[in-house]
Amino acid sequence: MHLQLGELSHVVSSPEAAKEVMKTHDINFANRPFLLAAEIILCNSSDIALAPYGGYWRQLRKVCTLELLSTKRVQSFRSSRDEHVSSLIRSIYSNTGLEINLGEMLCNLSYNITLRTAFAGRCKQHEAFISFLKKFVESLAGFSIADLFPSIKLLHVISGMRAKLERFHHDLDSMLESIIEEHRASNANLENSDDETDDLLDVLLNLQDHGGLEFPLTTDNIKAVILDMLMAGTETSSTTVEWALSEMMKNPKILEKAQAEVRQVYDRTGDVNESYLHEYVVIA
Image (cartoon, rainbow, N blue to C red; front, side):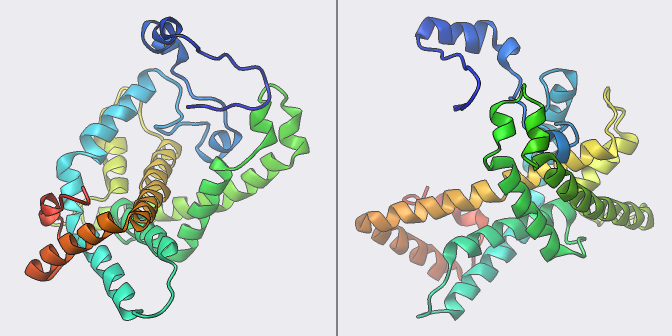
């Protein structure tokens, strides 16, 4: 659903019109709306989510499906996810009887897991980078008068949003550039090693150098795709879990069943392990 305030929008109000827009002429309506934050921070919208429909976008979708989010790739990071979830549980247990901000803890969990997946822990400015990511999400999802009236370019200047985003992009880009150079140097030293598990950035750098892609990946393209992965795996995941917990708290009977189910599995296994997820019927 796209709710646009400001300039005139077209509303599809019948099944026949919906079929024309979403099936017959789907390609003509496939492009995303203009967002100033995406243009500046995502390198002229060269990421997966907001790139214009065409060959480049289809290539990124293929890379995402076959390389970044393949079953084998996702499973290769399972131990990392188990480790971080176990750490969260220990942290909650150590604060028994005390007030905690579970939403913030879930958010940090998502960021830590996603950063480990993207950079394999090779991010020296870990906390600073998380802070920048949170600001990035706010800038992309927040209110901008210039986005409501995209045809009036002067609003980008008058509102001060362009200057603000450009300053933010400069700082974030410097951090990403440093991480990429660190990965290049590290990979050069490990060129003959088969034991190193490739993180998402390693995969993209390898495709850039040896992928033989129809649309060669630039460093800016890689930055945009990495930011996509980080956004998609953080705020959305933690928010979904937080809302699910809120709904269970509103339904005590369901909460009680879920708690009993978790205790039953955890008491038997003694640890948090994704291989037991199929046993969680109520939660699933």
